[in-house]
Length: 74
Image (cartoon, rainbow, N blue to C red):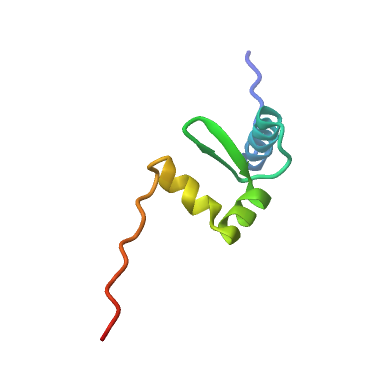
C-alpha cells in the first residue's frame, strides 16, 4: 500500500517563494525578470517606478511601447 502526503496549497506557495528568493539571491517577492534577467524585487521595482527607470527599461526591452502624446487642446 502506498502512502501519499497531502500538502496544503499554501505550502506550495511558501516553497515556491523560498525557491525564487534562493534562485535570485534577493529577499523580496514578487520579482521581475525581463529577458531572463533579474531586475529586482518589489522594493526595487517601486523605486524604479517612482523615478521612471522601470518604464524606460520596459521600453528599451520592447516589453511595452511608449504611449503617444495626445495633442493638447487649443
